[in-house]
Length: 193
Image (cartoon, rainbow, N blue to C red; front, side, top):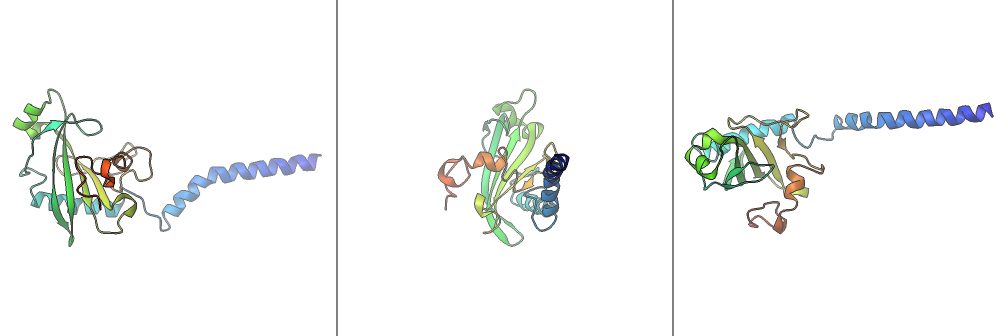
């Protein structure tokens, strides 16, 4: 009886140990070929190239073209301004959708139209990358920039650039999957292939 109890306890201990180590094993696999979906060195580096191309196209920065501000909603801003167009990054041309997110005390459509820099809190970008970048999500690259072109980070300290929140129940990809037309874009269906 004592030997049987030791075997049962030994098996339970093995199961508990394996269960505890499983997350560590998944983390180890991340370092052996599996890529982080966002916030990794390559995604952050690409975000800098994209910001530069967007600035050259006058879509971000102090010389940015502004569209008519409109009422926004969470998670973006109380007031938004969206522009889109083709942009070339590293020899690849794709569509960039730039949403400027405004907020703060006394933010309103009129105040943003008169002084956008005062209320700009973030610039969120969807950029259509090359085929094969993320076929599951229409090859969109996502980034959430600060007004100066630096990247915002999530609560875990990960830079918001790349396949942001891929496979998670909340975040850019999860939200935009619900966009009509199947192109992950809410304001039109022009990019449904």
